[in-house]
Amino acid sequence: MTNYDIVKKLIGEINPVGETNTDEIRFKNLQNMALLVEHLLHDINKVSYDNIKREELSIKKAALFAQKFLTSQGIS
Image 1 (cartoon, rainbow, N blue to C red):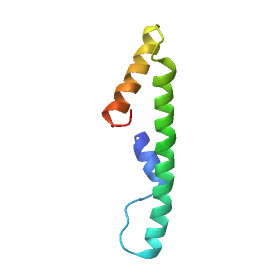
Image 2: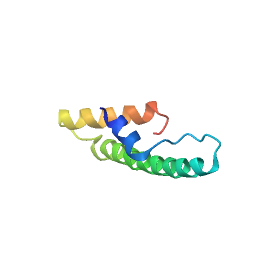
Image 3: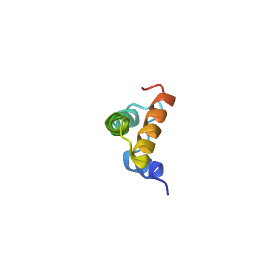
Image 4: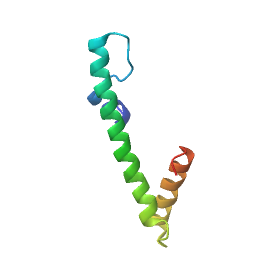
């Protein structure tokens, strides 16, 4: 089981189906998923921002990876 599978199982379905009670639950799940993504993106951005000028190879590698990921997602 991947981290993605675990998160999906913990948060639950997010896609609405057209039934009010089910969609209310799924909307709350969607809000929780969005909040999680916001926090994760913040963490990834922090790795890039805090470390991009560092000289240590392993730190620079992480910063460049984070920066490239954010750019590829149209975030940074």
